[in-house]
Image 1: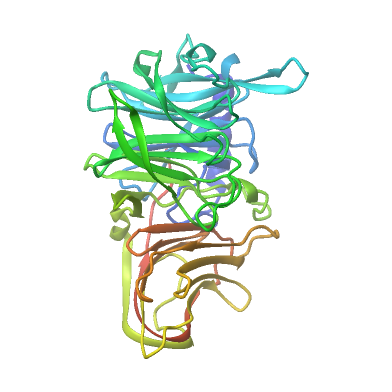
Image 2: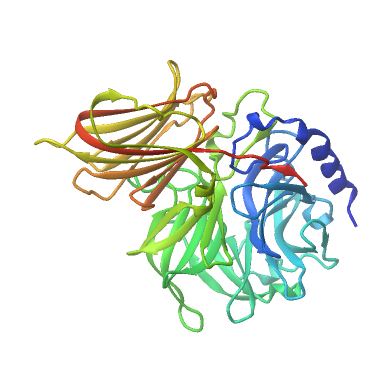
Length: 501
């Protein structure tokens, strides 16, 4: 039975969402029906289709009482809009239906597992959240919250665990047939940990173990966990709050961290071996993955930064978008990510230029636009190493977004200072890439309001939101010194995406 609050949200999005023209949205990145979007939730397969839920406040472009919005897709590229799935309409989630996961049950129903938030005054008189884990069951469109929610509360925490920071369950069915969930928590030392539970499909859960914890090394509270095997290793993803900067690997504030190691389910548990950032750009948080029917591990994330959410276009009727879904792999202890291969089905207008000498700034015939799949390979020429190579996209006489590579120190820099954002916020970020004697391979995916860069076959990725006017569509290349450059450019053409359900 649909509650009054959920029906209100559905009526609101049905009334106002269709009035936002397609040209005001990205061409192929997922956006909310209307209003605010943050973390991806319930990214999962159900009855042969991919469902993507998201943190949602339909009534404004600001964060507010959290609902769950709902999209689905057959190819990870074009999205069909479905009615809002959850609203904060029970005592145990009155302050918000926070992030979580989804899974198909053996009986054909879909289980949503989410964090319910209650807000009350503590002993000192301050407002305080209490977070518990809840479930709802449905058919892919409509969901009924279980009558005995919550299924996990303070009684299910390990000693020293926090009831205030206990959130974001990611649920899955393992090869052993059991259902598991990983949940973020804060421990007695004030920093984050990831907890593993079993048996959540029975609307209860058994604490299994703490998989890993921060010990105040990688930020504080560990949010939005995910845990999965990949290419012979075990991968743990999490989004720490209050990160300290570490060189060019981790920036201050909210981050996204990948921990790679081995897993002994009946032994020592998760054995961490490698730690890295997931995305090195300006806008990336709360990634979540699914296992596709063909065996690919696919990840999506909120393409936004909590520190810059105030820098939004004036009078925008939606705010927040997801990254392009990415295929993951592990090579030599490192997470690789590349755009889902389905994107290639939307390519048209191929333009290729080979062995183009670049010294100074050049543009190339047929290489321009705002919805592009662009690949650039650069190699040094002549007797001296070039000092830098620079690509300018979404460019006109006033605006541009810059991707720059310096071979001498092995850094790539993203600069969106002149990319149309209305406030003075952090606009640049640099990161280290593995040296290849001055050669670099860049794949740049441009949508109307974003740029995503994949370096050296997916060894690193960097994402940034941009709000440059759409007429700014020039692409230029420039070198300090001499290089040879190969360019392969495709337009990306879409039709009928983001249909109303």
